[in-house]
Amino acid sequence: MDILEKNILEKVADIHEVPEGAYNIRSNGQLDSRNTTANIDIVTKEDKQGIDIIIKPGTKNESVHIPVILSRSGLKDMVYNDFYIGEDADVTIVAGCGIHNCGVDTSEHDGIHTFYIKKGAKVKYIEKHYGEGDGEGKKILNPTTVIYIDDGGYMEMDTVQIKGVDSTIRNTKAVLGDNATLIINEKLMTHGVQTAETNFEVDMDGKGSNTNVVSRSVARDKSKQVLNLKINGNNECSGHSECDSIIMDAASVTAIPQLVANNIDAALIHEAAIGKIAGEQLIKLMTLGLTEKEAEEQIVNGFLK
Image 1 (cartoon, rainbow, N blue to C red):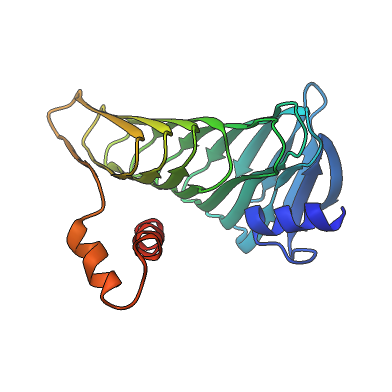
Image 2: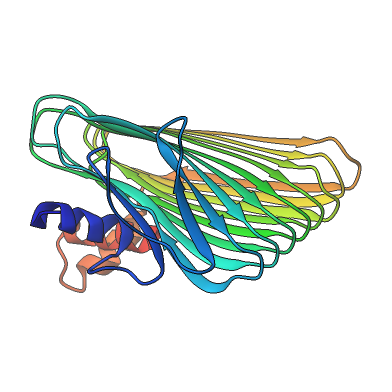
């Protein structure tokens, strides 16, 4: 990779040099480098673009990095990555995609990640999306995440997109077994005329399952955001969702929460708030010597932190 690609890699995966543990780095539609460990194997799919990540039962304190980089204008990349997490494993998985587009053609990456989390396994999943480049070509990212969590399994998903992506449709679908837990934290910022659509749907099929889905977003300029969030309580379970958005300039934000209780012992809660930055917050920071623009940036950064 050249310096430009290495800079993008640092932004989406916090990789400054060759990472420890297992990794699979994809650059411009091709495998750049790969490493496996005794407990984590990465296998190229034979029937379509993508990889299988196989984590042995009982694996502890190991990580997998699977970032994607696009630096060639006009490239459209599609991958299917499947994760098989063995019983009682405890791992961190870092994904994400960065696009640098200085051309006139659209660059796009669509990734479908499917997780099979076995009994008692624990996964921390970090996914970052980023776009840059001063060309007229658009930067499009459409991530899809499908999650199956067996009895007593746990997954925490942190998904971040805060700069440079012209259009994104972000789909997440999860099915939870008995006593399974899913935690989702989304942070999103749009600007210019960018558009972002987020669709979350969680089926709590197992007894004692629980989920907490939190989305925080900032919409600036003339950008548009739509959040569809649905929790289905199909058993004795506990579900909470929250969407908080700051709207600025001439932007638009639509939040569409949906709770469906199909069991008398399903306890579901939703919270939502959309509003502008409070004037007193700006005034307080400006009295400390910040300009109005600097004060806005401080508030936005703190909100998305």
